[in-house]
Length: 216
Length: 165
Image (cartoon, rainbow over the protein chains, first blue to last red):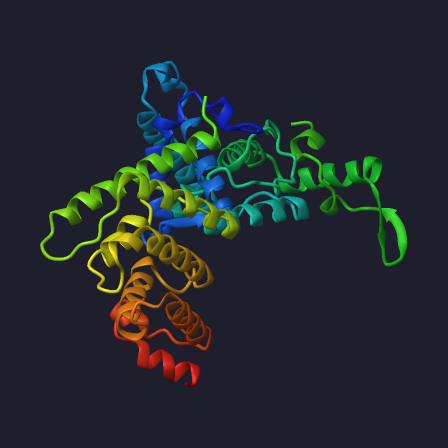
């Protein structure tokens, strides 16, 4: 199962007695064993992390869920988050080293830069304390995106869709794509102010899906 | 179905069990020892809840109380009849200054400093101890970090140098 929308303690399958030892251990790791106390906000964040992680049980294991203890479900959820994080790492590394087909579109570049920065900040140590961290920077509208997803799920799913889009684009000549994007921007693009004048914005300034515009 | 209130109740029950386990360990120790009854421990935990609420903190898992108890159980300046109230005051001081110095000191450094100063510098006076904690906080704000090397022990002279006494 993936994490969508709001999640709360009230929706939790397991009683608090079962969640408490997981939360306690996570709290110890969070403070590095240096302190018994944490802020109320940090505690809420850690509780959110436990719920999010338990909800991460992957589809093959979903059927087993009623039979799993909270600790087992949490361990499986952690495994799933780690798998997604590793996939995100691999895709980010590839984009950083090899680049991607962005055709100079600012919205694509900004989104990818934000993902790469998010991923740098969230190494495995950090992400287990807040896999649910809000993601509000996926502005390029990739085909197949699910805006209901939150946290690492949102980034993972987005990059899977983005990679699929890139595979389609690599089979098309850059000049053809640019021509279609330019034409689309001239015919359907928004107006914007450039040097004090309202003009049709070039395709690089717009936030439409490349495949949709090019009819691919 | 789980709730935050439920979490707090379970957390405090766990903490109470840890205090009583420490108490059993202390009762088996040789020499003078101050002990806590179950009722005392419950009252101290209730008081802690008020202190933490004011500081917007939560103690998750094992409380500081068993360690505070272990640190002070052989203190010659506290009578058994005053021990519960002493623990309430000590934990209040601990959390107040721990929070003020959150990013700088660890629990162990704070506990070591408090115990040593309570006996040696303050001769069992809580107000003097609070004054020393204020001085420690001031020294740390002035850049003092020497307490890391000794885990908060034997640092008073250095603290004085940093606050210019």
